Image (cartoon, rainbow, N blue to C red; front, top):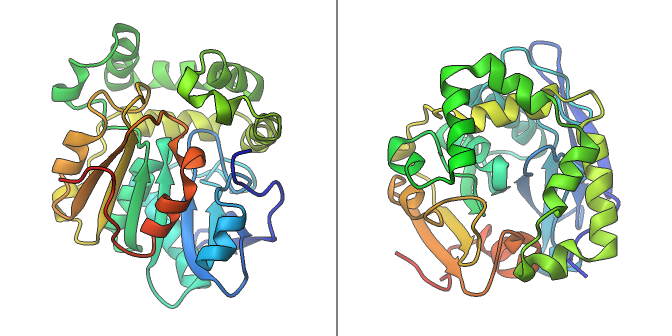
Length: 293
C-alpha cells in the first residue's frame, strides 16, 4: 500500500491580510521539523505522503489548500506570486522562518514561486508539471496537449471554461483511465484510490474555479525568475513518466542555478508515493539521487 495517512493529525485555517483564509492539515509528529507540502492538481490539504516515514524522519508535514480548493477562500486575482504570498503567511504562522517544501505535479509552479519569494528554505519538486508554454518545450508535446497550451495562451477565457468543465468524478476518471503499468501498484491500491477520490471531492468542494485557475496558471507562461532562485532545489522524475514533462524535467532543472536533477529508474508518474522515503529525506538535506547533474 502506498504510504499515506487517510486522516490528518490536525487541521486549521490561517487568516490572510485581505480577509480570506488559507486552510491546511498536518501529518506526522507534532514536534517534527515542519515541511510544507504543495499537492498536485485539484488536490489540497487531505493529500499527503509518507505515513510511518514521517515519524521515522521526524517530519511534520503541512499540506495546504490553494485558494479556491477545499476550505481555502477563492482569490479572484490568483497568480503564482499571490499564492506564494499566501504560503508565506502560513509558513510565518507555523515556523520562525522559511521551511523546506515538497511540491508535486501541478503544485510545482506554486512551489517555485514560493522559492523565488524566499518563503521556503529548500524545494523538492516531484514529477513536476513543466512550463509547457515555453517554445522549446511546446514542440515536444503531444498534439492534443500542444493544442490546449496554445488555447491557454491565445484564448485564456476559453481554456479556463474548458478546465472548469471538470469535476471530481471526471477528474478521478481521467487520472485512473489510462494508468501505466509501472504506476499500477499505487493507483490500483484500493485504499489509495478511495483516498484520492476523497481528496478530489474535497478539492472541488467549492466548485471547479480553483482547479480551473490553477491549470490556466500552470499552462500559461509562468513569469518566474527561476535563474534568481538561491535556495537548494531538487527536481525528481521517474524515467518512465510520460505525463509531467517532455524531457523529464531536465531543462527545468537547467534553468535553476541551484538545482540538482534526479531520475529514478523504473518509476513513473506516481513517483512520490512509490518512493516517499528518499524524497522526504531530501527535503531535510541534500542527498544524492539516482542521477544528478
